[in-house]
Amino acid sequence: MTDSNTLLVTSTQEGIGKTAITLALAKSAQDTGHEVGYMKPKGTRLQSAVGKTRDEDPMLARELLGLDAEVHEMEPIVYSPTFVQEAIRGREDPDELRGRVVDNFQALSEGKDLMVVEGSDRLETGGIVDLTDADIADAMDARVLLVCGYATAGDADEVLAAARSLGDRLAGVLFNGVTDAAMEELTDDVLPFLEGRGVPVFGALPRVQALAGITVADLARSLGADVLTADASTDVHVERFTVGAMGGNSALDQFRRTRDAVMISGGDRSEVQTAALEASGIKVLLLTGGYRPASAVLGRAEDENVPILLVQSDTRTTIDRVEDVLRSGRTRDAGTVERMQDLLDDGVDLDSLLGLDD
Image 1: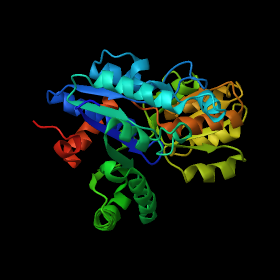
Image 2 (image 1 turned 135 degrees about the horizontal axis):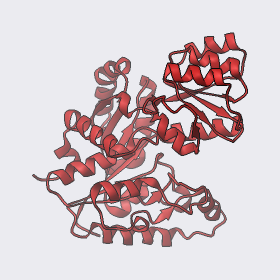
Image 3 (image 1 turned 180 degrees about the vertical axis):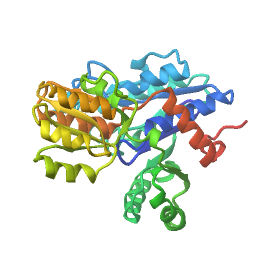
Image 4 (image 1 turned 45 degrees about the vertical axis):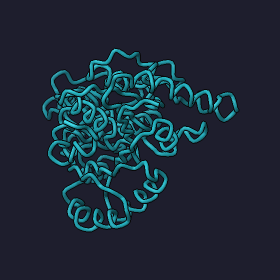
């Protein structure tokens, strides 16, 4: 095994900012003059359901960190639905897969001061081939950073369970995307409790609007949607969706109770679309079935600076796709990583976390 310092970043849930944190840590170490490598053993954010195209995260890492390694070297296992089916049928060899991961890791870590390894969105991913993130940490002799969200004190249950599964490999916990309303309880009560139970905590990062959700432009790109409003801005962020499935008045009441939302409805539902344009919390209309909206709706959307997207798929299929995109969080770019670097610089002891000497 290599002598390089290795940090594996994993999380307890999807869409919590693990990728941005992983790359920000790698970039921060690189910015201080250290040789840094990156690896994501199991590719789960695939651009194809059958894994014909690979995970987007290693591609971004390769670009941001200026790495020479090929994507297939950084991501030796394409953890697609097809792979999972084959593994369950006994057509994947866990020993061969583990050997492939270790061999690639050793090659990538050659000459590096730090290897940053991006884990899965959930600790249990990979269990069918004996390659959970805990298994990979053992294979790489890695320290583990556990990234968690926080909403209520009950979330401590999940953190404790994850800490137990990682054992002595756990370097510490980092909470991310914590709202102002939850921050006081977390810092005053939960963090001391966890540390009292032997769970080290590196800190808690606040929720930042620019890092929450995805932009409308990213949503349109991920769905392959047409943007019907030429002048409405697509830089606005959305974090959730609502479905326009009722009449205009009822829909307006529903829409006014949400914020930073995508409204999904059939393209022929003019009354619902008009109601959505009256609610400040609706940031974009996503119309299904290939039906273009009425010209009056388009004109109103342009006036209100609310973009309208159009997809050919039906409403049920579109809902599933939007849910998947929002959950996985597609806003991953150089700007996202730079903003996360600033948050980490302000809120975390990076020297301790990265284990690097100046």
